[in-house]
Length: 304
Image: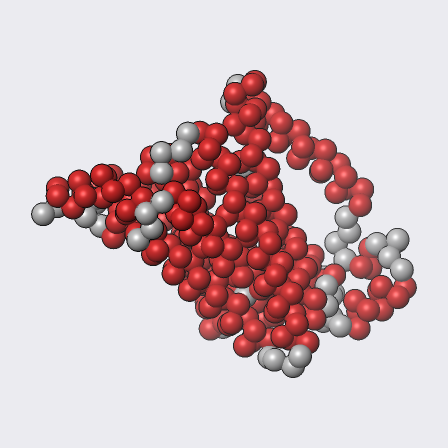
C-alpha cells in the first residue's frame, strides 16, 4: 500500500501545475485534497457497519474494489497535460497556457541545484512538522475517543468523521481566501505564509485546550477545530511546491512528503512510547486531561 500510495501526491501536484493557472492554484489544490478527507470520512463511517455485518475482511474487499473501478475510469479520462486532451476546447487551452510556465517534459532533474536552495529545505522541514501532528491525530484519535472519552467502536468512528468533514470544508475555504488575496495584489509568498501560520498555530491552540475541557462534546469540538485549521496548510505548504518550481513540483513534493512520512512513523511511535512509559508527560496531560477527571487526578497522585 505504501508503494502504491506514495506516488499519488507527487503525481497530483505535477498534474495540477500543468493544468491550473496560478490565480486558481490554491482552490484547485484544496478541492482535490478535500477528496482525501471525504475518503477518510467514508472509510470511518462505513467500516464499523461492514465489520459488524460481514467481518473485517469486507472492508479491504469493498474499498479495494472501488479503487479498481476508479482506476479504469481514470485511465480512460485523465491526461497528463492539456496538450494530450483531445476534448479540451481551444478557449480552455488558451486560458491555461496564457497563465502557465513552460510545460516541456522534464528529462533530467537537477538534484544538486534543488537541494542547495533554502526554500526547498523550508518546505521539507514544514512538511515534517505538519505531518508529525497530522499522523498522530489520524492514528490515535480513535484510541483517544475510546479509552479517554469512553465512546464505543461505533461512536468513535462517527465522531472521528467530524474532524475530516471540517477539513474538507475549511480546505476549500482557505483555498478561496488565498486565491482572493493573490488576485487583490498580495504577494504569493505572503499569502502562503499567512495560510501556513494558520495551519500550524490553529491546531497547536485547539489541541492544548484539550487539557482544560470538561466534556466529551467539547473535546470533539476541539479536535474538529484543530483539523479544520490544519487544512489551511493546503493553501500554504502544499501549494508552495508549485510556486517554487512548477516544472519540478512533483519532485519537490516527493522530497518533502518523504520527510512527512518519516514524521508520521516517528511521531506515532513516540506517542505510543510516551503514553506507555511517560505518564507525567505533557502529552498525557493533554490526552487525558479533565475529560476523564478520575484518570487525571490518579495520574497526578501517582506522580507526586
